[in-house]
Length: 435
Image 1 (cartoon, one colour):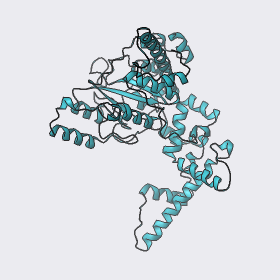
Image 2: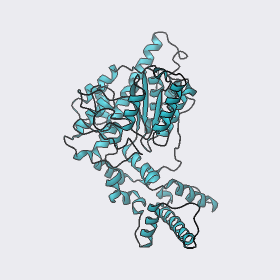
Image 3: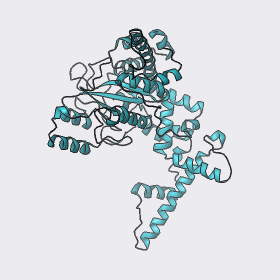
Image 4: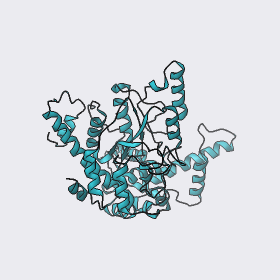
């Protein structure tokens, strides 16, 4: 089975099949009494839904120990807020080893927690929860979809413009559209966005000229953008289409090797990054393909070992030398959300929610703005990211098979659907899984 899965995802690493076979023997040793789980939420990866899922399962609402204050579903981790709650509980008589927190989540990264590049969050959790074993959960997404959503919603802020465009169409009695093929004019939406900003700049200048203060001041960057636009510079040229982005320096600045934020590195000879650990996500890594010792096979192998939770020697202080990094106790894939959540419930032994989380799923998805030719360009440019994505899908295939085998074994041993409360029977049935 491992051989067919490796072939399905075009894995070429010599050890790929044996590493996938080891997934079948991997022991799921999550312990709510011992472990503390941090979710490093990569922008536009479906992470808000997973943060909500953690609230409902690992938090008090799900009967768990609680989410550490300072966690934000769409923000950075607030260390001061977390410390204040910890200190408040200790001052009221709670022993440090009895602190109830089960998990945290944020756009802020955790790894590496050891070595010269260790993160602020890693230092904080090691200091404040020394009795807990730190572990990581993560989400990743199709390589092109990941960039398309970040481009449209983070870099260019076009989700509002799409809603405004369709509201204007509906006011004229026209139907809503979601892609350029249907009549969605991305470039015109960018013009509208620029026009609005320039009007705000002119209005602010008029008020200041009269000695009055605007109700809401513009940022210096916005004023510079206005000045550039007035001088004839198209400041949002890279937002006008996927073709514009791919031809722009903004692509190299922001969208190279984005999955370095996932594990902290792509292969063992590469240094860990910690530039996602303080503020925001900080995409814009050096190209993995230019790193010393890079090969597609090494990225596949490392992903199968690290993201797959098979290697406990990985350390920011030196593999096999320093203390081990928090391991990936679970990960999900945005395009496979139903399988991902079924594995989450099974892994953490928590009761399934009534429906699969889908927080902030856009009605008009930016991926529809990208052509097949655009997808091929990204695939050619980002072999390291694609290697991670392919290996992750292979791991998930194995874990789905392993879960099915374990459920069947438990049922044969006398368990019932009722006693296996952490199995999402409805979801598995919808996926066509026969048990």
